[in-house]
Length: 334
Image (cartoon, rainbow, N blue to C red; front, side, top):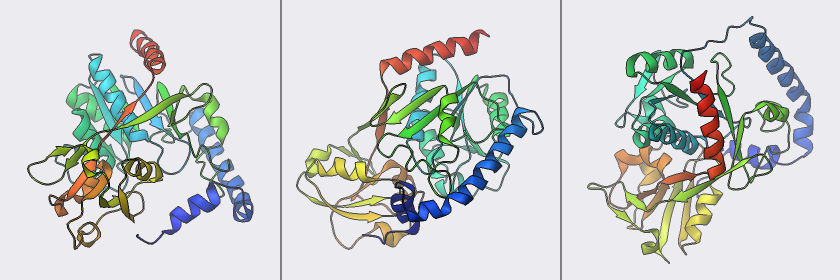
């Protein structure tokens, strides 16, 4: 197994419990809260401008640091609006991408090192315009003018206040929730937890509380990274020893899913958004190598017929569809 990295230790042992270190860090958290409240107020009174564009904007984000499941929800939303006859466009910061231009359009064959792993997955699975930019207002305007998009979905844009929005959707990890409830650096919160009181919709992964909508992950069949690509059921590997590569935040549910199929796991765990080198994903044996789709887009150049990934599909309840239908009618009627 790869060495446990500092950020995981920090998250697991400090942010998700109340302990002496988190208490010692609280004064810095109070300073952090004052800064973000001042920043928010400056946007609200117009000292820092908020840009609106002439199509509805849906912001998907979270108030905790780390992954909560935003990307599968963004993909679900894009397909929802496509099925309704709209032309959605998706904008993102492209975390980890090394693009230098003001705006970079993402295609299914884009380099994940350039645009980021999550925007590339979105482009591959949505078949709709995707752009990454440090200034998301610019990206949104470009998608509207170049591709005639009539609705924009902003991935991980909750704290990007310069872009106006019509709907805010917060995603929560239903198992880890809000950790110890403290703001950075004493806890995982990017904003105080009362921010959720002003959010339009709250989606919670795996389990939910009152006024939240549960998002489930539906695991699909294994897809090979080799050429030509093949698809097999995970049950075909039952009782086998396999390598498992993960570079995602909180992969425990992924491990548990594999273990329900009686696989013996040799785990190679890396930080979220890790950029792989060949020696980290190629081994001196013939065992199957399983990874998430997010990892697969970065490992494709090193892959062979032993490499497989498991796509996931987000599933939301009908009640979420119904309330989103209501919001959609309001956005396009006024």
